[in-house]
Length: 160
Length: 423
Image (cartoon, rainbow over all chains, first blue to last red; front, top):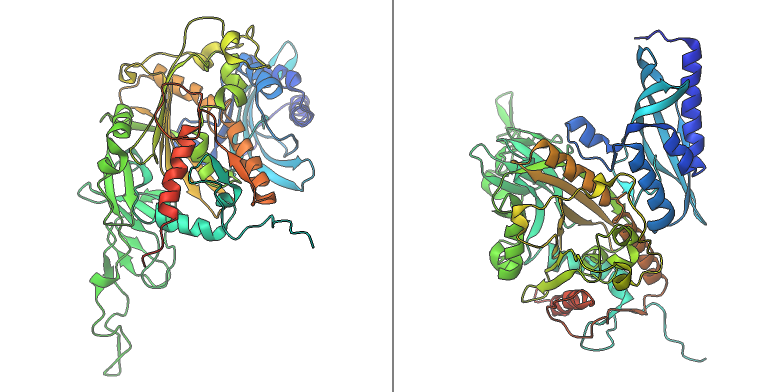
């Protein structure tokens, strides 16, 4: 199934995905918050919960304000072993196109590197996205990160 | 040659009959770990296996573990809950690979041995042999008895919708195991209402399993490690608090009621405290008191050895400790609500779940500190940890400024682990 999409919009969509990966890998949490709409949904969900219709998410945010609260916690309150993360994101598969709105999905793998340690595969899954254009800028209205990884390697501090 | 004592002792050396100084070696030995599995997980104790709400229908099952042994919690056609070991009586195969599902019977794929949902062996292919050219070839010996070759069946206790199991059929009744005080807190949370499972979080923590019990028996750290709690006013040293144990000091409840008076900075002494901080979206702490709380806003209950029962304001969960060798455990969170929750309450519980779990505002750092305590232990097992806040003895308290619950747990640990093996 192929959904028709304006090539300019698809280019913008791939740029948005590339930008997202760059921002979270650079730990630029202010820029991360800015990539979402004010009343966005951001969830990190175990695949099992998603497929069984269980509503619990590992991270469950319902506004840009909540993303800002997460950014604050990362910077100020959460003790954690420092690490780098590196996202590798596949090309978005477009599922639905409406005026100023695209529904798409893409695969991701996140590698984690801790200081003085080997790099490991940290979290693997897919993004289910709804992106919208407001004021000529594309933003995430909804980003669900549905992860296959059965066990989280101790903890997840940064957004995926 | 000067005699520098070895960094790697043969066994844990306790400095005194007390338990305020805990040898690192209790966390680092595979041999001790196996003795713990035998004595705590496989004998004389009830272990958490799940919630009845996870297997509502006849034939529903869930695969989980008791200690490091794979078991299946299953509901039979009459509605009774059974727990059987997931090891085929024939060749020992862990035959059930799905984590949940619905079955009429269990069949091992290797040689098609089939069992009822309660674990009785019902069929063995070629049991009577194969007739060929007027002669019967093979077959099981004439005295092969199906009844003697079922799956290992565990003793089961259900209370308030929670399922416990034990390999030890001589284990004391669950109510006696918990004791009246802890049973009271158990019944407060599981008071007979139907539970609604909201979902799971699973993490692997590279530390000894006892450290998770200790973490929830340690009211010293929350206001210090979990600065998020303090920053947003959920944890205060002037919270009205009590610590209670069962008579043998293996289980415990940390009971607290949010303090209301005074500026928090005066009572926390946390240098990173930021009183002026406000949440951008305060729905994370949209707390609505519930009638069943009966006062306390948080009760954290540790049931030794296998589970933690969490009530932190509106967020409720079970946290199942699943050891995997001495140096790691899987930690499985089952968040739930109650059948009479409206949509707003369900959303509230899900939102407050952001505080907990492997990414939680106040739980993610627990896994982190456990990992690095374990690293310290492994590097020099001849050394010992301290648990001397509030003294060196063991007893209930009406405050949180103590490590008495950790000392109590090790008192019990020593009682059980230092007995000579009777067998």
